[in-house]
Image (tube, rainbow, N blue to C red; front, side):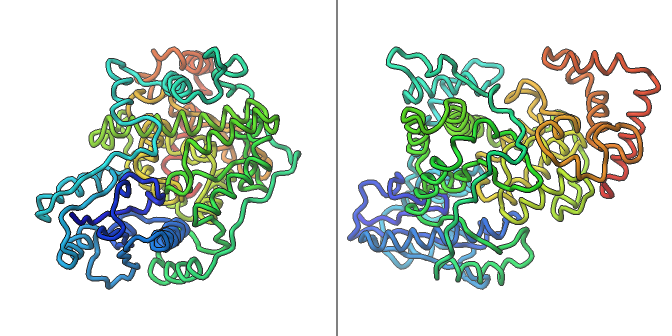
Length: 510
């Protein structure tokens, strides 16, 4: 029996289940850069370069390992514009008996592939993605009977399952499950932040950059200064670099933002983990060994592992448990269009400009910029969930639907009614000022609320609190906010609401 083995652009590892027990003499691996996948959203140019180059390098590795590989390079005039068309063409030519693939990370594509056996008249075997620590069924079993899902409790189960940062007695190392309270220091320039890990583009990457600039000229972002790893070996070096130079300070400053530093002490490993170039369990184990070896403190190591073992696994399980209906959630009834400055960075709000500009240049921004700046503004302004979700999916190199949608729709926008998070992550400018130095260079004044030059986050925060009283007044974690709102003088509340309305009316001019 000969098989066609389809490898997707986020499955770039020889350990992927589709390749297991394959016959290198008879089977044919298929990989393809296709218009439908490259253009269904406004993918950042650097994201396209990363994936196309990593795919080409991986195809070359498979060929060196003895696999027969059919690879379609992108061209706008390709006859096959979809993965299905590529597979159909290969079925006509190859004389195979079956198509094998590993389950994909997006409901849209999953639905398509699930129907291929009928449309192609060929058996299609969809294998589980074993790169995740928790299977879909394991997560579903954990979630069964719970009205609300909380990452912290799932994370503890994953710690117990893997043994990561666990004592021989089954206790968490450091006698705490979570050291998040120790991870909120503002960065003032010291210790100095390390330069980001760099890989200079080789001939393959250089050719991809040229093609992306030509064929995707109207897409968001830039290809300039592309320095991501595009092979597993280089991604492993990026991991080592993070462990040595950034992890020791990552915990203290993981929530900090800076006017002068894009990367600070963040790992920038998520593009590699999510595309298959790094194994998530191996990454966690490397971080844990850094603590056991005295090379990084527990708050840094635990906080980093929690992002992967906790949030990453949690949102993936939640996505597959609730799709496709989850994507349509809009419990707060948001209806405002996404402001155009999300695509340009052309705004006088310093924090928003810096986050969007870094995103435009790097296809990356760290989790606090995403959650508490661009996400917080979208929440306060009442942006349509589908529009802000599509923005996050497009602009980040690590964004795939399974990880982006729950994080944005559930955590950022609270559009699922509290299913994922117990309270909305809404904050005024005070939070941004506490965690960054953006405010000192801003056109707006963070210590003002109602004046014409007042920080927009301040009035928008209270406008959000007021208009969603019915949604949140009975939430135990929101009671203090409503007490503070009600304590303010009537004329102050009226001025804040008036300022908020003016901001929303003139949102494109902020």
